[in-house]
Length: 199
Image 1: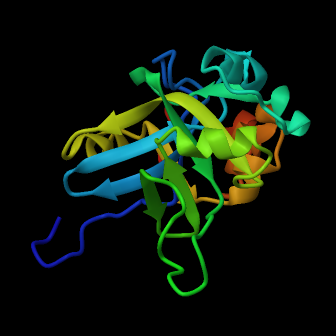
Image 2: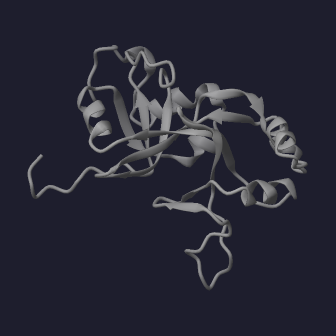
Image 3: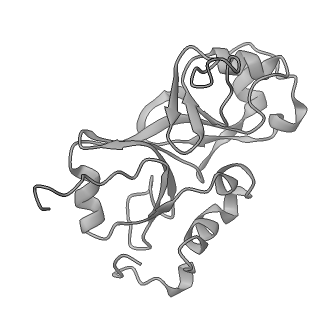
């Protein structure tokens, strides 16, 4: 990379695992990147449901989920790091119009591109009361790459990248998310060779 070139920034992008990816955690995965800088990257796998749903999760943390439409939604395996910790990816929820950049919740990362990721329990408490963000994806664990690690994996053709579309995260059935993410690149899974490079 030339010294004067801007560093790659894939924040608010999808990483789409190439067919040759053998790591079970990431095989056929779509990762939404919440943060990417020269220090590394952080993201959530959006298409690997765990064996529990939100109703069960809320019972475990002793909250009553009063939004029945969310009860059957799966809790996702967001990645192999801190798998006991919850991460909630959601549409933005603001305190009031005077401070549009300020989130309602105690520990929220505002992601350039329009989404937020909250790690504090208050977002779950809001959902329990019937409030909170309308569109949510709850995961246990996250995916992380150290400095230069993701760039190295991209150079090895482990991932395809494309700008994220929230409709793939929130409005697409889980089993279709991999194919829908590929379609953002105009690709279909059967056309990809495990040895293929970037689109």
